[in-house]
Amino acid sequence: MPVLPSWLTEPLWGQFVALLPERPEYHPDHPLGCHRPRISDRIVGLVLDQIAVDGSITKASGGGEAAGRSPVDRGKQGLERLGMTDGYGIPLGRMPAGANRHDSPLLAPTLDLLDGLGPLPDDGTVRLDAGYDSDKTRALLSGRGLYGRIAHKGEKAPIQASQRWHVERTHAWQNAFHRLARCYERRVTVIDAFFDLADTIITVRSLIRRAWTTYR
Image (cartoon, rainbow, N blue to C red; front, side, top):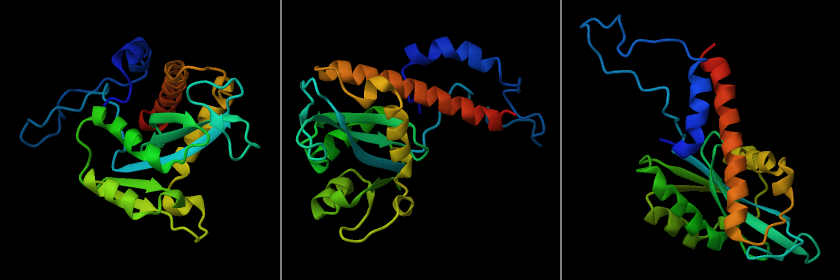
């Protein structure tokens, strides 16, 4: 399933395909002399049976449409983003809001971003922290045909236990871009544009890392 629009990937495809070995469309060793054709190298696979969602708060000293009083920064203006990744950590989208907003009401519009990816696997799992430990969240996921792997309130557990470290790592990758570590923009459309650019770079870097081992 494509994770990026074609107008972003087309300029990179010519350089990427030059690194791939030439392979026949059909496997030459098939006993019947025929077989299903190879899946094109242009297809980017997503691990959509394992989805992780978590929030991150950054400073937004200039205010704006997605700014609010931050509960972790002495009430200063901050930006809350609820990020979503696949099982490898590829960013699938985010929902920006004021830092005074709780994560759980943002879950439904964040999951709506999956609609553009086509049908999801039947056994899809969404991994969430203890802030989503409620019957309302479970009903929301069940209504979408998803299973929730949710940490329990009051029970301390390492982030690896719920496999949410993928989205936490992606938050760290995004925050490594100075433009995203502190929000200077006032309009949500501009904020999303900068995040889309960063997510493109993160995704292409991941493809390159996979190519080092897959096509060695």
